[in-house]
Length: 133
Image 1 (cartoon, rainbow, N blue to C red):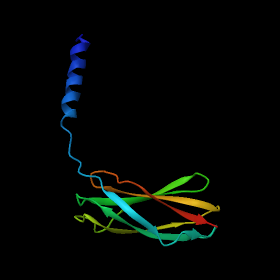
Image 2: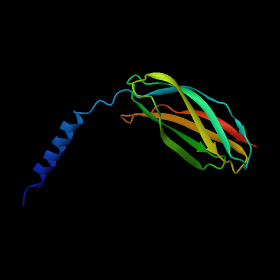
Image 3: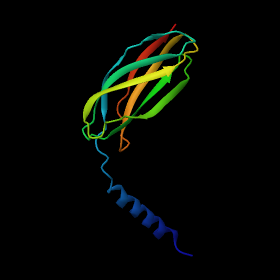
Image 4: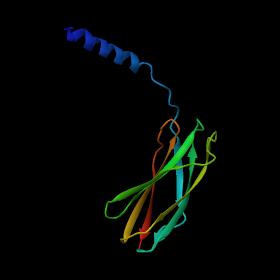
């Protein structure tokens, strides 16, 4: 039977060596200026909430965006990730979004928006509110 200590030391050394060889994943994108054209919808009726935000991505590798909708009840659903067409090589610009939902209850629905680049770097999140009456 082999001694356990040399095996553990080998594993520890391999872990330390691989930790120093990390891959460069670039810079995370950033988003700002979220505006929604629709901020009030009717309970029980399907509504399309459209809007726009701007992005900055020094690496030019923006890939997708997602929107998380949280109902007044606390339940949430994420829409996406949705591919961003024509973003390859683009380092800044506007993104238009449209979210279709049918609010079953009255109150404020919170929308969180974020983007992800091809390296998996996630941006900050922007938040806006849509009121169902």
